[in-house]
Image (tube, rainbow, N blue to C red; front, side):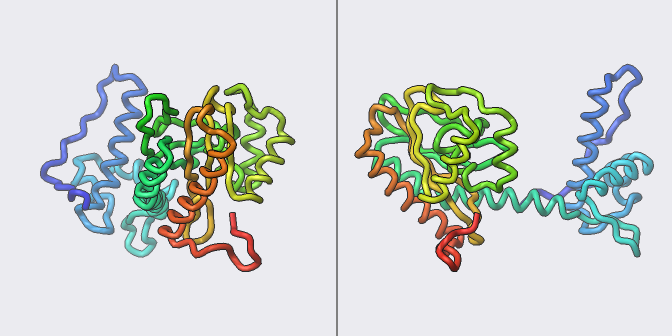
Length: 283
């Protein structure tokens, strides 16, 4: 549980000196805005301008300006009767994103371990953040030669099985936005033709998994399957990756089955009960 904000221990906020650069002033404003949000943790669900000013030792005009900015973006909401403020829907949405990420990592970790142990290759979990593929969890191969996957590093969605399995199940407008952003060569076999990429994405949706070789990184291959939440929406991709010379056709067929079963295990942990009526899963 987050620590409560103690009004007696909050540091006083001093105004920037006359020679302070604009960037420093902007950073101070952000700090004060965050302090306002944190004040709701310890001082009750509803607060007035006077209460916040007293807690943070800030002038009322400053608090009023920051509170209006937060309210305009949904981080605070004003009660029309009392005039007091409470936490807004934007905070709830951010919290939901955090919990969803935490849930999928927790559900995926045993599967990642099993997959890495069974194959000797690197198993990783990827999500879409700001239009890019980002690895949020992994279990690395124990072999001397392995495919290194960096947690937290954004990479394009249009190249490699990890990105393509996420892009394939994205909304059509998101797919087109990625294509409009430009298809640049990343590896020897990066697909640069938009029509061909669209066909590949349709094939991935149809068969339920993606494979790649030398698309994003020369000498690296991967197999990836979609992970769904309780509504059937694809929220992550489970990937097995390694050096291309070890990903022979026979092993790729084996890995496809393992990855698909692993993705189904994670999806079941997130509440996914199978295809919707009619035999096709929702995006």
